[in-house]
Image 1 (cartoon, rainbow, N blue to C red):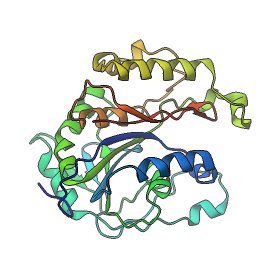
Image 2: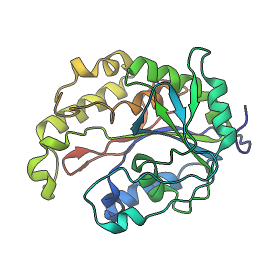
Image 3: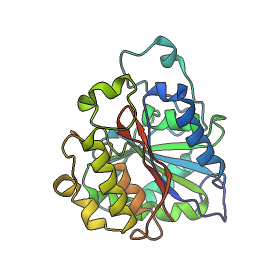
Image 4: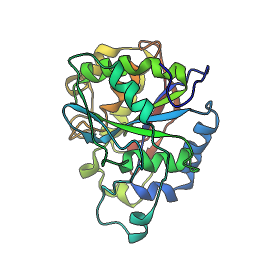
Length: 265
């Protein structure tokens, strides 16, 4: 089922950590994201699943003019003036709907633009904003359900669609303390969760990952709420080999939080 234009290149599915807009002023992380995208085949379009959009039933966002959502508070004014004028992807939206199960309705939200979980990493990875982008919502935070959604979306990869789950491997913002001021590394709960996730991913242990609330060390500090880990399951579902070890593209810590970002086969 072709999207905006056909492609014979299978794109990987990605899970990445996104920061707030100040990420754009961090040369290390910007360079890591830019280098990652430079080594990928050029997508025909990009499908974003962000931690910052959850609505039931599942919904697709704007497909013509694609505005930005400035869903953050207390930052300098210039961050609210940033733009990312990507083309819309109406055919991709139709394809997403067609791939969902009969009991998985998909609503249209034509006024809903890209939130910062989508446009901040896109500014780093594809700053020209010349690739069609569609954002879809997560209908819930259930790992098995999100994995199934990813599995249904997987055929889009063969048409050159880059599927991106955008979250953060750890996201315990209330608990990072002195790491706010730039202390290197991360607190024990962040390091332990990151190590646990890396090992489970390397082993292809989906059952353990699905049970992260009960099995992961560092909980609930690593994820007081779980929306930043949840996009990982869409990415894993979209993998051609969900139980194979993904490639780690970025690792390390930012403000004490794990930046670990992966791409699947």
